[in-house]
Length: 285
Image (cartoon, rainbow, N blue to C red; front, side, top):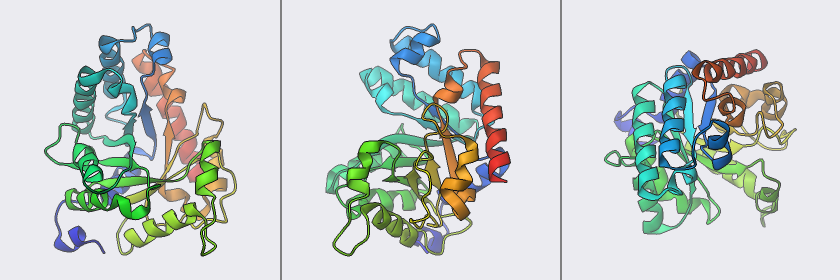
């Protein structure tokens, strides 16, 4: 059991996520305002278009989806003005009851990793989020500053483990001296991190929904499994039980273009998210 849980401080992210998934369903909607999508919405590829896009998504879905996953890079490309839009989106999404998973995939060592953690997991930061995606490929131990701050502030982490991009295999499927793959090692670290946590641990893995049979891996890490790949990348909600097996109840399916392409019409966004959520519910049971 983690030190923060022992001390009974802020409610852990895992507990808050479990409640949101039970009440709202497990769907995570990405906020990915890339240039082509802004154009599809009839918006300019500038800060005004970015703000209009983001505000529409948050207002349309903030009271119904469990999790928003803004991709930080699409805001950072506009500099400080883009980050100001992201700050507003994070605050407004959380005000509407949605959890915010910042998709920044940060990874470094020492004081630099600590600074990344403070940016997204520090309570006084304007970008304070419920959880953060992180890269462990400088070694899982390099994530320690983020793990400790997440634990202290009731936040979560999603560690890249088995990603859906083909290039990831050359690292994640590499075999270590002890015979285990790098991905299996990351999952084992997360399982240890979540030991004793309930109803759900706060330290999750990113596992692509497009990867097919993953029975060779122990996905029962007692934490959430963020599952990108549904929709444009080819996976469907019906694939979730086949990919995740007994761990499927802890899966957070992530959809971006499958919902966002139905904007800027608010009703279209809501209907698309609701349809996917229903398909997920039917598949997961």
